[in-house]
Image (cartoon, rainbow, N blue to C red; front, side, top):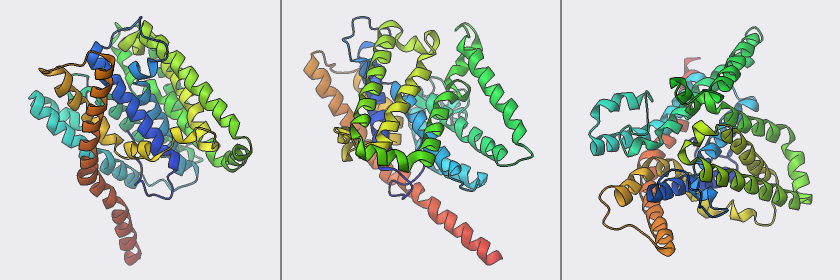
Amino acid sequence: MSHDMLPESKNRLEQCESIRGLAILLVFCFHYFGDLRGYLAYPDMKTGMGLLYGGNTGVTLFFLLSGFLISRPFLQGAPLQIRNFLSRRALRILPMFYVSILIGAVISQQWGNVLKSMFFYDIGLGTLSPMGAVWWSLAVEVQFYLVLPLLIWLARRPGWRLLLIPLLAALLYGYMLIRSAPLTEDWSGWRDSIIGRWPVFLTGAVLAWVYIVFGERLQEYGRKQAWVGLVLVVLALGLLVLLCDHRVRTYGIFAHGLWYDYYMLDGLAWGLFVFALLNFRFFGYRLFVNPLLHHLGIWSYSIYLLHSGVLFFALRHEPLWLPSSRIEIVLTGLVLLGVATLLSALTYRYIERPFLRVRPNWSAARASSSVLAN
């Protein structure tokens, strides 16, 4: 899950960390309730609970936010320095990821999968269990980091722009092909790759373009007509609840194969939600943009990598006690979320943040050496 800059960066919008905090809450709820009752279809689920039992919709929100944040500087005209871009991405995601690989190897003793995991190769739900259950989405993020610079590079070179047509056509063809693929076909697994999820990243990039081109006018309108933002958020959340309710009741974990179009609808609904938060300050805005969600957003990458291990030891690996009543389920979830958050705050401070601080110093050092060389 992308964290493209330090939280203090002037280029970061205040909404982004809070949106990321909401996304990781949804992902945590998905795995918590899934580990408690299973990930199969739940036809008796109460109306409106789909966002909790189907909280993997938070992954779609992460992808959309990455499309917005990573593409935005380039759409504003930032120079494309591929080496620097990929170095920044690597320093952002690899240190904590490699720590989680080590933890997974110690727990699972699947030492043969360590090297493959380090290069995001052949990662499945059982890879270095329980840590690897979430890594498939990080692999999709990495694929996005590799595809985006290529698209930007081609788009900025007049002599090469025509190559964008077959490349984009190939992405569209691949998406339509796996969209109708039966689950018995091996290549149906490409649904959980950039080929299957690129429309969500594209939605985020379109939001970035709209924000750059029309942002000032939209925000001026938003100050005068704040109620429009509230209507948009209610509409977006209503759509998401309907989608998640239907998906959980009918398909469960198998929705990615049996109702694949859900993910595109999911991305469009989240796009409407993010659009409203970016441009309007409506009544209830602080429910979604606040210090609590902001800090969860800052720690979200570590929470993402660590929470499946916390849930595994608490709920699946010889648990001494499992919650049964409604109040026990809620309290247990809050305690486990607190444990995962505390661990993640520590790993953010001592593992992630030092590498985040390296990047601007590294860039400055390279700029200084370039000046001296000239």
